[in-house]
Each structure stands twice: as C-alpha cells, then as structure tokens.
Length: 193
Length: 129
Image (cartoon, rainbow over all chains, first blue to last red):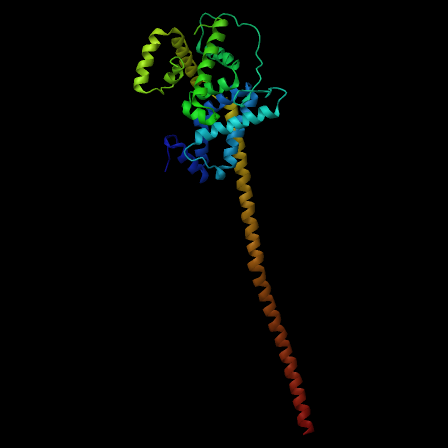
C-alpha cells in the first residue's frame, strides 16, 4: 500500500526510518533542507562550508538513528546539531573566523569582518536583488543577532531562547536590534525596501 | 518595550489584547512600521531561498552508499553466521558419522579376528583335552 509520507509528522517519519524505510529519511530532508541550509549558511557565510555542515547534520542522524532520543523535537534537534557543528567548525578554523570575542553572557561570538564600501543605489529592487541586499546586511550583524533572525521564521522566540540558552528578553532584544541595524545598513546603501 | 514587541507581532506571538494594543502603537510609530516591513520582506526572501540541489543530491548519494555498504556488511555477516553454524553443527555430525563408521569397521575387523583367535584357542583346547 502506497503511504503518503508528506502527511506524516516528524516523529512518525523518524519511527518509519528507524524501521528501515529510507524514503521517510528523504522526506525529513526535503522538509527541512531549505531552512537548515539557510541557517547554516547565514552563520558560516560560505556556501561550500554550509553544504558540508548541512550534510554532516543529516548524515549524523542517518548513521546514528538508533541512538536518537529527541522524540517530539526533531526540528529542534536538527538545528541544535547544526549549531554545534557550526560552533565546532568556528573553533577549529580560528584563522578564518575568530572566537576571541565573547558576549556579556560568555557566549561565543564570531569576530566581525565587514566588507567596506557602499553598494550602488538601486531604485527598483527585484525579489532576488532584495534577497541579496538583505543577506548582505544580515552578514554584518553580530552572530547572535544573525542567529536569532534566521531562526525566527521556524521557531517561536521561546523555543529560540531554549535553543541558544539565553533569556527570552535577551533573544527578543537581539532580534529587534538586529533588524534595526539591518535597516540602518540598507538605508546607508540607499536600498529602499 | 512596545517597539521590541514588533518582532513578537511579526511572529504572531502576541495575545489578542497585546496585538490590539500593538496595532494601535503601530499606527503612530513609523520606525516599527519600517521594521515590520523589513521582517515581512525577510520572510518572503527566506521562503524563496532553497538549499542547492547539488548539496541535497550529494547527501542522498552518500546515504545510498552507506545503505549499500550496510546491506553488503549484513550479507557478509549472514554468510559468516551460516559458515559458523555449518562448522559448529554439520561438521561435528559428519565427523561423528565418520567416527561411528570407523568404530563399526574396527569392531567388525576385531570381531572377526577375536572369533578366529577364539576358534584357534578352542581347537587347541580340544586337541589337548
């Protein structure tokens, strides 16, 4: 009997996959590939590295599905695993991205490497151009602001606070200030939304 | 705090009464309206950005390779298990059968010899007595 995998919950797909149904694994990948890739790419700012870390996250689940113990929280598990992999990557590649900076809570912070120069004024932005400008502006945020901004479409602020282990108020302030900073950056570049 | 609520409003995480209050605030706050517009545009942008197909294809080719390797390993294990069972069960039973045949053959041979010896002894005994 043909099963409609897209209608199943994450937990149901995980159970099926653990019983040997690899199509259930593929469905989980298709469900989260875009959001997870965007998050990793935003954090490491490099497509090649993002692709490698993306694979590592899903391969970790594929290889160790029997030791997976996050029933009811697959999405959170996926993003937390990605967060750890990003953190480990940054720690192991200090030459490219420094961990010297820590915030007031002692959390890890990437060193900012901001490109110089203003972008030319674009009076009429297409969706793709707008996406590019937003991405470039987001790259100039602090890692914790960027992280919250990229997690926001997929998690509630309460869930984000749990994931990043910071108070809800701090997470809300990070997001608010991050968006304000992006507004300033876009305004400086003359990119009106 | 009001302006910070814009991110909660964008995520639809305000209670109905907070939402009404914030919408009233929004009418008079250009900064919040701009921030909300940017948040909405970011949501649109993110929904359009897909993971590169090459990255996904590479993942699936790796998982396929792992599955094949795992299947091969399981078949090898099954073969090894079958060989072990053969070695533990079948070989001793064959050996036992062979030993049984050997013992029977030995006994047959010896019975004949013993019978011959007994017949000789009997003949000698009859001669003497």
